[in-house]
Every structure is written in C-alpha cells, then in structure tokens.
Length: 106
Image (tube, rainbow, N blue to C red; front, side, top):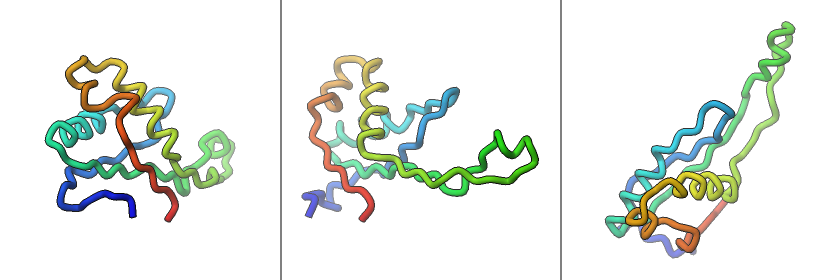
C-alpha cells in the first residue's frame, strides 16, 4: 500500500518529457494547488511509444525510436528545476524536502 487515500485526491497531473525547445511547466501549478488545499497529487509520467525518428524519415525510411518510459527521477528533476523560479510562499508547499511516493511499472 502506498498510503495514498482516494478521499484526499486532487486533480491528476501529467508530466511529459521535455524537449530541447519545449519545456511545459503548468503541471507544477496544478501540483501546488492540490498541495495548498491539503490534497494528494497523482502524477502520470510520460511514455513515448511509436515516436518517428525524423532524422531517418527525411532520408525516406520510416523508423521508430525505441519506447521510452519516464522515470520517477526524471519527473522529480523537472519539478525541482521549475520550482527554483517559484516564490518562497509556493516553495513552502513544494520543495526538495517534500515527501513523495513513486510507483513505476506495476
């Protein structure tokens, strides 16, 4: 058991892989809202399946990249990167010392 109680569940959040020129941060605002309201947060981590390898596609070959599953560590790294820019009031709810439970590939 993870100790997470559905009765205290807030909005579910999706965390996607960042790309070189695309780094969405809005999911952290949703996490903060849940925590500020005393709610648990369920974060769904990104899965890349059947992503086309565009470097081979331009040469006329349709090749797919291998599947990639976001790790809990990657998600945490992204969250910590985003909260560096948050004000102290928000960091009170979400910071390096916030207790998190990670469950992967059940």
